[in-house]
Length: 198
Image 1: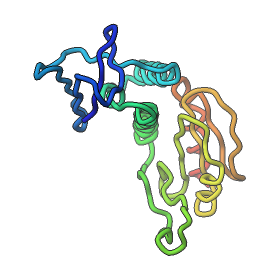
Image 2: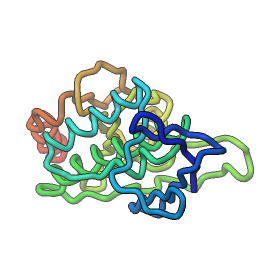
Image 3: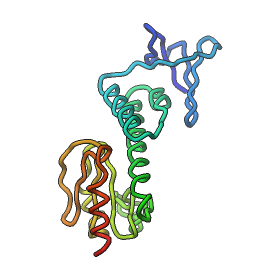
Image 4: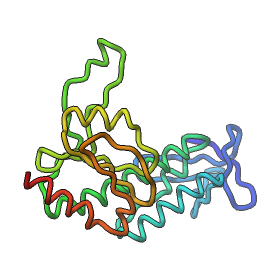
């Protein structure tokens, strides 16, 4: 439950606001004075607007529909984080749909037991996808964590970093980076066919 104020047709976060917004899974409802509001329009900061535009662009290019309203309903920094999470989910779904047509794909395969409770250190255990049990794939919509990829490369000799749009990032030896994936999936698919013959 979040509180908002309505100004110039937009909802602004306000602890003392007269609009109450409820978010439950994918359902968002707003009330003002006991009356249900239709067409909730949340104020967006420029960075939030950029992420929302990326979601819309990715939806248009992939054909996968997603409602960003639940993410928009969160106030403050949480809104940007939820929008980024939505964008990441959307891209991962697209990648999965493309590669699972041709290969056996597992999601979030745990590569080893985490000792976080004992050591206090965080280890990256689960690449987004593992193809045919041999190749790790990590789908990223923002800057990747090289240490994360390096940890995966200890268990998976071959792997790929997949980005929806342009970008150039370092990957561990034996790994490849594929950009503009929403436009052209063929380089990754060709590479996977070659790697899996080895």
